[in-house]
Image (cartoon, rainbow, N blue to C red; front, side):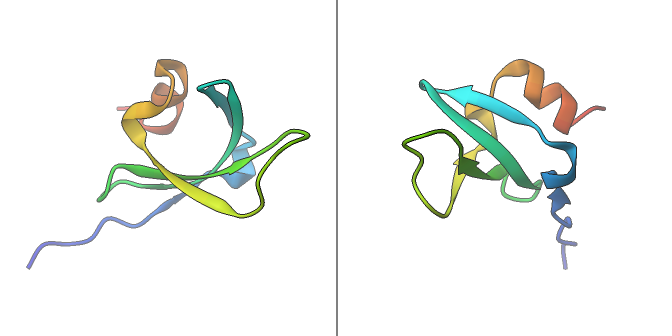
Length: 68
């Protein structure tokens, strides 16, 4: 049986990034699904969390999250 990788909490690192002209605050990284929970920040931000693929993040943020 395969082990599930635990999620990595990112909210304490205060990481933000811009994807498609929308600014997001990164909350949690799921290595098993290679996805990230994010929350929109700004004036016209939607409420609630969204889950976006890890591949859509900028390269600088990817290095900070998954530093091997």
